[in-house]
Image 1: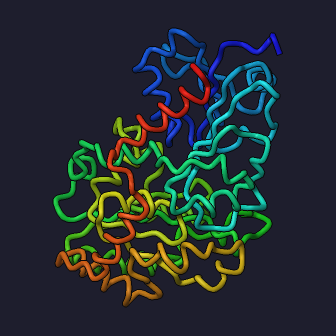
Image 2 (image 1 turned 60 degrees about the vertical axis):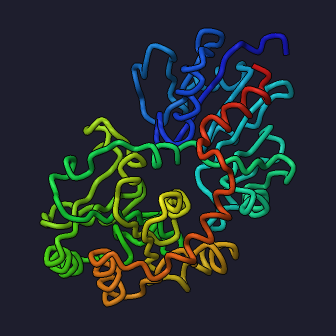
Length: 360
């Protein structure tokens, strides 16, 4: 193994994002880019990122070379599929806490020296879902959440809107996969399926001076809805936030409430202790395919209001307007369990762990 190079390889989905970028920036801040060569493996082609690193497309011979000849690897999505060499060290910074059954997609056994989990509360489920030995799961928190709690973004300026702003993060709909869309049922949202649904919701939002920002999942269908213009609903993606020199997580921290369905983003948003609504119109289908973990169904989903129809949605919107928070006490209890660390700075904690594990 004498040929392993003094390199640290990074990967995230999307590129230069999530918890990986937080750790990367912290390592740069501490001067490690002067001691090691930094390489980003990216899903899209990039000529460069910054003057501290070089880039290579994930699916390429150059990527294969860096993966097989570098001493250290930090990833949050796909790099583990190739496994690691005996003297390589790899850290998996989770793409999210377990909500959906993902055991058939992940196999970390033998591919990592540590899995960075959200919380000790989730560690057993994380070990099972990611097929990782329990002793290698470390519930240190997600560095990406530091961007939520430390955000200085002026959300009203970005969206040119003076009222309250609700973010909506729908996830992929694996239960409704079709040949032409293996990730879902062809709609942006399982509640706002048609232009008529969006128009009806838009009128209610407009009446209450609330903006709904729908953050599209990369595998979302129904993008034809984007051709329609609504005064109180806006569809955005990662490129939108980049164009405003910010990130979705920085903006999320400033939102007045969150709507989602079965996305682990609710765990991230839980840290700011604001209202959460779960759109569960297809709960029974999703519970079967791909399946939902018991921890989410029976415990952590109690931090939000369940929404099964438009009446429930409009009640949630009205509560946000009136500052009513019917599940606040339950959410506060869960927040204390999910975020037990006295120091909220997950980036520093995880970076310290990586430095120690890699013996940098």
